[in-house]
Image (cartoon, rainbow, N blue to C red; front, side):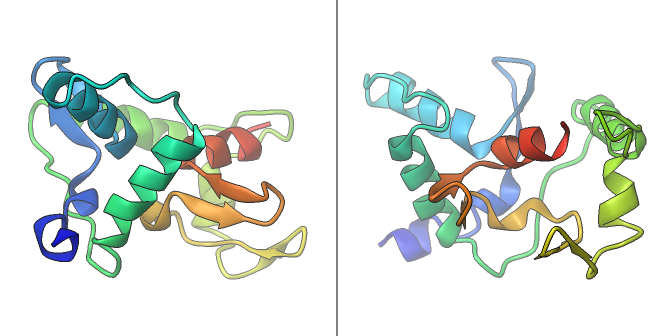
Length: 143
């Protein structure tokens, strides 16, 4: 039963991969599992198939708090992410924090600005007419 065996799995990602010596997200972990344990080909990043598998695994963790391990191996990556969150960038010279810390709950282009909790990905967006990853959303936002 996936509801039991996969419960909480997505809430632990990104997670440090000792072989790669860096954190991997859930999509990357699914692809590594396919290749290493099933001898199946890796799925293209953001393909319908990989998004569907990721959504299925993530669904089993819905409502659970994020439980990412933070230690000496992951701290430098966390620090880099935090710096990027507060760094102004893109054509509009905005930092993620300006919307997701300072203005969450307000509207931008008809959409409610959420807090910066990436817990619900992949998500369905009408503008995409399908599922999309957090990375797709970030690319869309950081223009």
